[in-house]
Structure formats: structure tokens, C-alpha cells
Length: 121
Image (cartoon, rainbow, N blue to C red; front, side):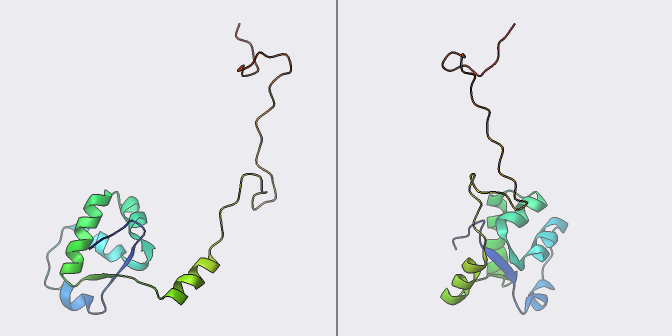
């Protein structure tokens, strides 16, 4: 199974039936219960301090045990989700509070080429 940090996983509908037959370490239970069907795998792993290769390995095992599934979207659901996203603001656009990003000061007129505009004494 190919898994990305952008994938969203969720516990299966019959999770509790399958979970009762497993013994996991506390961090594995914490990780498994964090798979909420909304938060990307990479974000969960980062918040819990789990390296991505370990996260991928364990969710693969969870999937094999019938504990989790990767959440998928129909094309229409994907389009609706993309429309709802806000694009990143470009550097020249004002921020949310209306302020423009600070620009670097221009070099001094008499400064040599490549100079950063101040003298070292």
C-alpha cells in the first residue's frame, strides 16, 4: 500500500471489534486513536513525535489488521474541498490584517556593488 504524509486515515466502522483482540504499546494506541478521518498522517506523526517511516509502517500494519482505512474522496468531494481552500498569499499582497510585507531597505547610493549598506569599523 502506498501511503503519503498527506493521506488521511480513519478507524474502521468495526474498529472496536478488532481492537479488543490486540495488545499495543501506549504510543501505538495514542497514534491509532489520533487517526480521526480529518487530520493528515504527517501532521499526526509530527505532533506525536513519530518519524514518517515508522508512521507508515504502523498504519500499514493497522490496515492489515482491519483497524484503519485510508479516507478517499469522490471527484466531486475533492473539487468542493479545493474550492473551500484559500490559496497562499503572494509576497506582494497584503496580509489578512491589511499590512503589506516589509521590504528590504534599498542599498545606499554610494555603497560599492555587493555591499550590504553599512561600514565595519
